[in-house]
Image (tube, rainbow, N blue to C red; front, side, top):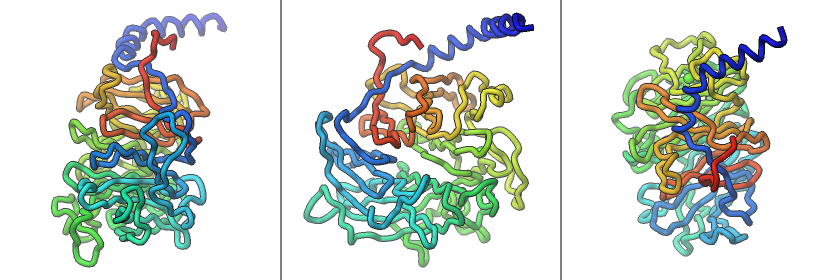
Amino acid sequence: MNRILPRSLSIAASLFLPFVLIAAEAIPTLELRPAWPNLKVARPLALEPAPDGSGRLFLAEQVGRILILPKNRAATNTLTFFDITARKTYVKDEEGLLGLAFHPKFKANGKFYVFYSQQEPLRSVVSEFTVSKNDPNKADPASERILLTIERPFWNHDGGALLFGKDGYLYISHGDGGQRDDPNDNAQNLTTLLGKILRIDVDSRTGPLAYGIPKDNPFAGRTGTRGEIWAFGLRNVWRMSFDRETGGLWAADVGQDKWEEINLIAKGGNYGWKVREGFHPWKESAHKHSPYLDPVLEYAHTLALMKETSFSEHSPGLSITGGYVYRGKKIPALQGAYVYGDYKSGTIWALRYDGKKVTANGQIVKPNPVRTVASFAEDADGELYVLLLSGQILEFAAPIKAASN
Ligand SMILES: [Ca+2]
C-alpha cells in the first residue's frame, strides 16, 4: 500500500503538470526587498500618495499616526504628519487607525479622511481632517469633522478600508460587527451599516447627516434601508481597491473557519455572508435578499478543503489581505494581475481574471509564515508595496536570475 500512494500521486501530478505550467507562466515569480531599508515604523496599515504633485507618500500606523516617508530611500527619519495615539485607537488586534484617503481635490482643499476605532462605547469613526495652514507637512489637529460613527457590538471585524472612486465619492468597508457567525445577522440586514461597503459624498449633506448620500446609491431613498450601502453580505472586507485602469472594485472578504474570498463589487450586490461563505452554504439568516453573488476566487484554510474547490491548485491560508491590480511599469510580467496575500501564512499570490473566470493564479513570492502581510499599497506610478505588521515596507522586484521555486 505504501508504494501505491506515491505512484498514484506522481501519475496525478503528471496529468496536471501541463495546466500547472501554463498557469505558472502567466503569473511571474518575484522577489521582495525592503523599500526603505533603514526605516523603522510601527504596525503600518496604509500607504497613500498625496494627490497633489508633491511626490509625498503618507504611511498610516495602526497606533494612530500618519508619517510622511522620506524621498531618499536610504534615509532613517520620517516626518509626523498626524498623531491621535493619545486617543488609544489601537487597543488590540483589529482595532486602530485602519484607513486613510486623500480628497481628490486635496491640492486645493487640504482635506483627508481617516477611519479609526474608539472604545466606550466600541465604535468606528470616519473623520475629515485638514492640513495646517502654516505647514503642508502637518495636519491641523483641531480641524476634525466627524462624518460617521458606527457602533460595534464586538471588538473584531472593523473593516476600515477608505478610498475615493473616480466618481469622487468615498467608499468605506465595515465588518459585520464581530464575534462568530454574525450573531446579530448584520451583514444581510439593510438597516445597519455593519457588514457592508458604503458610498458617501463628503462634499454635500443629506438632511441632518454630515455627508451626502449619492442619489444613484442602490438603496437611496428606499424605506427600511440605509442609503449609504453600496454592497452587502460581507463579513470583514480587509482591504479593497479600485483597478485604476478598469475602475473595478476589488474587495477581499476574510473568512471564518473555512473559506477566504476575493470579490469584484457590483452596485447593490449581496456577497452572501452569513448565508454563504465563498462558494458554499453557511448559516440561516432572518433576511432574504437573494441572489447571493459568488466570489471571483476562494481558497481554504486547509489543503484537504482545497480539494472541494475549482481552485484546487491554490495553496491554503487563514486570513486574506486584499491588494491591487498591478498597473505599474517596473514588472511588465505582472501587468493586469490582481495581487493579494494571506496575513497568517505570509503567502502572496496574483490572479488573472477575464471578467467571467480566473484564467491564472499562483504564488508570486515564496510563503513565509513570519511575513505578516497586513496590507498592500499602490503609489502614484502604480508600483505596489507590501506592509508587514512587524514594521517593514517591502517592494516587488523581478528576480535577477530564474527562480528555483
Ligand atoms: Ca461571500
